[in-house]
Amino acid sequence: MLQRIDFVKSHTSAFNTMLQMENYLSDISIGYKLKGLIKIRASMLNECAFCIEMHTSQARAKGESEQRIYALSAWRKSKLFNEEERIALALTEEITLTNPQDLSDQTYQQGLEQFGEKGFVEIIMQITAINAWNRIAIATRMEKAQMENR
View 1 (cartoon, rainbow, N blue to C red):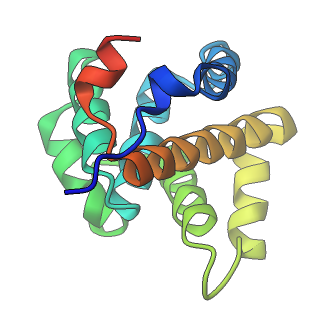
View 2 (cartoon, rainbow, N blue to C red; view 1 turned 180 degrees about the horizontal axis):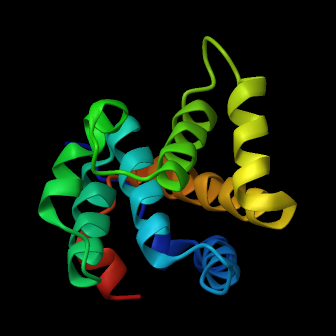
């Protein structure tokens, strides 16, 4: 297998830029459980095994149930998620999977009503950040050891 670049070691300034975004996201009004659901669901959609493993472990450590983590792939049909979580997950899917449609007017309006303008922007930033991390991890075949050695 072709050796990929070590994003963390060889491009520290790019990695630090991503960490600056994470620092911003660590202080937003969205709760850690909702952040975790967004990160896990986007990582599932992007098929980023590295991020799925990392974020499910983090979510469990912060009290998220195994049952809800397993149900994320079928959240629309599960009764385990409340209205706020459903709207955030719909936003996550529609922003992550931009093709064949973009963010629908209905989901946009629901997100704005549920979270307000500030919270809505924070959700978009959280979705954008995890999608960027997914793409970096997939493109570089990032390993857990790379993140631990930073």
